[in-house]
Amino acid sequence: MRQFTVRAATHREALEQIRALYGESAAIYSHRSVRIGGLFGLFGKEGVEITGSVADTMAGRGADAGHGGGRVDGAERDRLQQEKEKLMEQTSGRAYEKLMREIGSLREQLSAAAGAGLAGASGGSDHPTLRHIAEVLHANDFSPAYCDRVLADIRAAHPLEALDDGAAVEHAVVRGIGAALRVVGGSALQAAPPPTDVGGADVWVLVGPTGVGKTTTVAKLAALYGVTAPADARRQVRIVTIDNYRIAAREQIAKYGEIIRVPVATAATVEELRKQLALAQDGDLVLVDTIGKSPNDFQRLAEMQTVLAAEGGRRRAVHLTVSATTKRSDLETVFGQFEPFGCQAVVITKLDETASAGGVLSCLIERRKPVSFLCDGQTVPQDIEPATVLRLLLKLDGFRLNRAELEREFGVDAASRTTSTVSAAAETPVDREAVAEKAR
Image 1: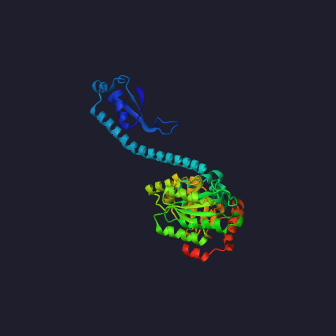
Image 2 (image 1 turned 90 degrees about the horizontal axis):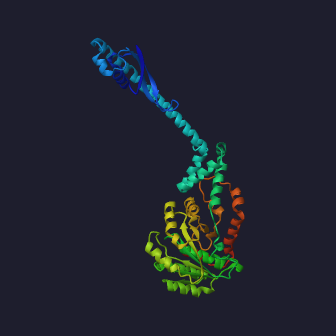
Image 3 (image 1 turned 30 degrees about the vertical axis):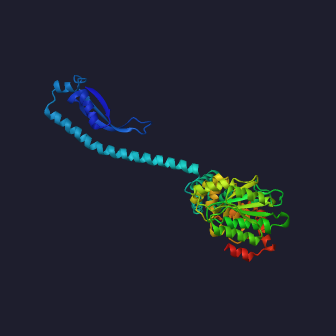
C-alpha cells in the first residue's frame, strides 16, 4: 500500500485530485482543516488536507486505470461516495465558522492597533478639551482649515495629560490666535507717516462692499485726525468722494464735512480725481470715499480701480472696509474680489453688532492682512479706534479668557493709548449732537 496526502481549497477539489491521481480505489483515512499560503500564519486561506492510501498496483495509474483495471464493485463505489459527502457536510460548516471567527479576530486586532497609533499621534483626538475647543472655534466661525491647524498644534505641543487642564489649553489657543493676528495703526501704515509727521501728504482710500459703513468711517477718520487729535499731531484733512451713484451718500459726506469743518470734493472721472488730488496739496491727509459695490459687480469694480489709479503722484494706502457681522464665506468672497486694489490694511466695522468676530479674524489670519482701525458704532468721531490685538481677542466668544495675561502679552499700554486718543475728543469743541444725529 502507498499512502498519500493531498491539500486543496475545498473537499471537492481534494477528492477530484485523488480520483485523478489514484482512481476510484483510493481509501481515505483522515481529513483536517489547514491554512494554505499566507505569511507567518496570517492572511492564509482555509483549506483541506486529506490522507489516504492506494494499492501499489494502482498508484500512478490515474482515473483511467481506476476505471479500466481496478475492480471496484458498485457497493464500494457507493460507500466512497457516501463517505465523501459525509466529510463535506461535517467539515464545511465548521470550517466556514472558524474562518469567520479568525477574520473577525484579525479585524479587531488591526482596528485596535490602528486606533492606538492614531491616538498616540494626535495626543488623544477624543479628549474632551479638544472637542470643546473644536466646538468653540466652529461657533466663532473660524474656517475648518484653520480649526484643523489649531487642533494639530495643540496635539503637537501638549502631551495627553496636559489636555486635562482645559483652561490652560484654551489660553494657549487664544494666545496663538493673537500671535497670528497683525495690527498696524492707521497712522503707522508704511504708506502713511505717523500723525506727528505732518510734512508729507497722504491718500487713504476706503474700499469695500455696500453697507459696511465706509462713508461714516471716512467721517470718523477725518474727525479723529483733523479735529480731535492733539494740536501738535493734528492734520489738514481733505475728503474726496467718487461715489456719484448715490445722491444721498454725497449729501451725507458733505454734511459730515460741514459739521467737522473739513473740505469735501467730488470726483466722477479719472481727470477729476487727479485734479482734486492736486488741489488738495495743502492737505496732510486726503480721505477718499468710494462707491459701495457688490463684490460680484465686476464691471463697476474695474471702473473704480481705474479711477483710483489716478493718484497724482501721492502716496496711497488702501483700506478694505468689512463688517464684523458678515459671515466668513461671504468675507472670503469680499477679500478675493477686492484683492486687485492692493489693499494694505483692513478696517473692521460694526463690532458692536456681533458677539464674535471669529469669521473676520479667520480671514485676516489666512490672508495675512493687518487691521488698521476698529469701529463699534455710528457716532462720529467717538466710535473708532486704532486696532489692537487685545481688542480683537476680547471679541472671541466661548473661550475662558485670562484678560490679565492677555493684557501683559498683547499690550494693555496700547489699549490705554487707544482709549486716551479717542477720549481726547471730549476736550475738542465739536458739535457732537449734530454729528451723532447725522450718523443715525
